[in-house]
Length: 73
Picture (cartoon, helix red, strand yellow):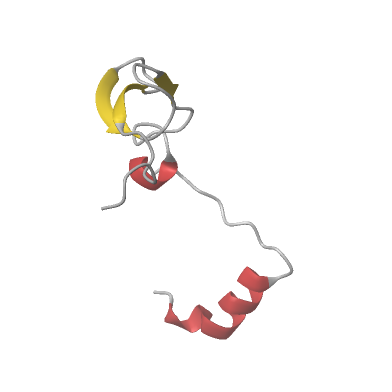
C-alpha cells in the first residue's frame, strides 16, 4: 500500500438528535471532533415508517395510477 495517499483515520464522536452519542472511526474532521446529526435512524421516515406523501410532479403518479390502478386491491 502506498504511503501518504490515504486520509487520516481517527476516532470521532457522533451525536444523534435525541442527545445520545457514540464513538466511531472516520476520515471526517479531526481526532476527537463531534459530528452532530440532523437526521438519524430514530427520526428519518425511511427507518421509522413515518407517513410520507407522494408528490405528483408532472402528473406522473396520476398517469401511473391510471395505467396500473387495476392492480390495487
